[in-house]
Length: 157
Image 1 (tube, rainbow, N blue to C red):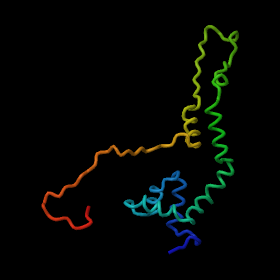
Image 2 (image 1 turned 90 degrees about the vertical axis):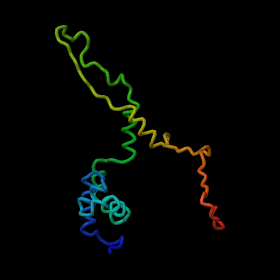
Image 3 (image 1 turned 135 degrees about the vertical axis):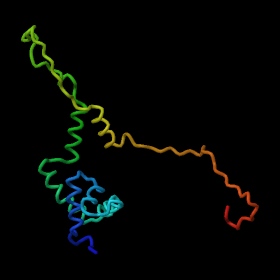
Image 4 (image 1 turned 120 degrees about the horizontal axis):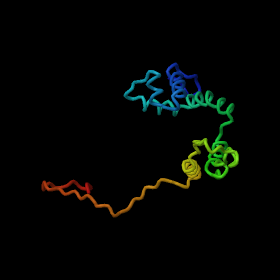
């Protein structure tokens, strides 16, 4: 068995390759690397816990992220630009009213970024929208009764 400081096995290297090209789909990567389909998601979890597998994935992804200058600050900056973009900067007419020709109808479609989605992502990052589970003691209690008439052993209640 390989230790965490050793090189990847052939199957682990295949897993890393498929994990990256499949966009981080661990189960799919494990299947493609030759692990049993029935337990692929379990094997993927185990592989992703191994430091040498994490390091191999990072070694492939980090240079590309560096090349594209992608980091958390840039992503947040771009989300903020989309979330807080004033609409009047988007809806500037291309032609002045006196340049329009009455016989021609100009129809233009423009897709604006998803402002609500951008705000939600920023809010999640800032932990503004934390999913909470409320637990109360108002739930009905389950009471077990022994209707057999047998004496219960000591400490069974």
